[in-house]
Length: 142
Image: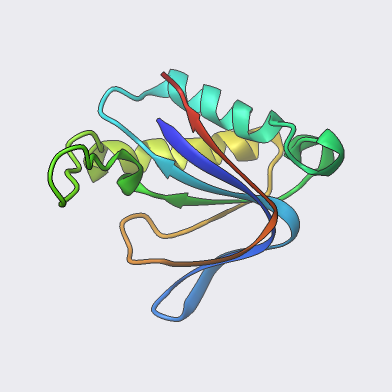
């Protein structure tokens, strides 16, 4: 499982002009990708890491600040461009595998206390954000 985590001042995700989720004030945007062998262990690790990561101002975590989190599914995090000019997506899990794990990460974040906004799995989404810093990290479970 891979995630790009960005510290933001505000963010929103929309499909066809309709806003599906948004956050205002300091928070995190998470672009989340799932690979074939991910499971419950990766879900728990990723959610805990995102929530406790001390990347907010004054070295605080989202948990300490009760900061909101916007989570967007992003299979392209597993794109491979080592050969040729066209990415391959072989490492990305199919939707039947990745959608339940995406939802599980969101639910685990909520269980930990996060206010979570979501995109729409598999949709052509438009993500707008105002970076804070900018602070952007890549997390990987294995």
